[in-house]
Length: 163
Image 1 (cartoon, rainbow, N blue to C red):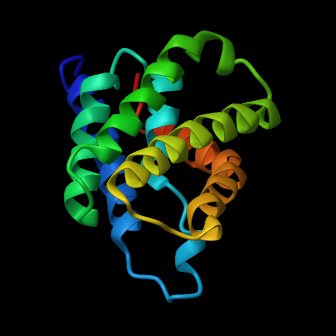
Image 2 (image 1 turned 135 degrees about the vertical axis):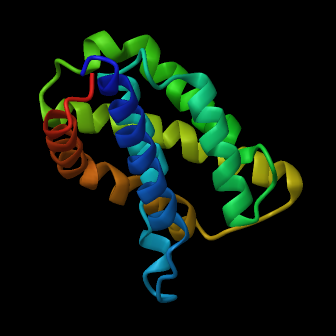
Image 3 (image 1 turned 180 degrees about the vertical axis):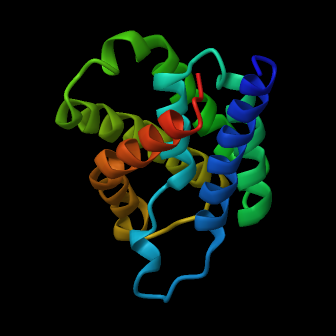
């Protein structure tokens, strides 16, 4: 039974990333597109906070390349941004995970600002432009969703004994 727990943990983590990737590419109406949360970033922050020994920079890089591939963007753009977010999260995980939910949301806001800025910077160097609402609205929506994502992933972690 002990040998099945690590496998189960890997499958649960992989399943959460697959769902996040599906939500990332799920088609939305034109009016809702600027409000699309950064699901992959939320999942990465959660796993780096609560299971830093399982999800780290390598997982973040691979998932970032998958996001780049699925979104049709510059290869490595999301990977770079996600690695930076994961690195900061891993450095601060012992402090942040004991914060109350509203302080964690402020940390997620800061991490999302870093993620958004890196994407903004890379796009700017390439000459791509987007409106401010399209660029910054996901930052706010993702931050607002943080408490619910934590509750859902905590339930999954407890239900499937992911550790």
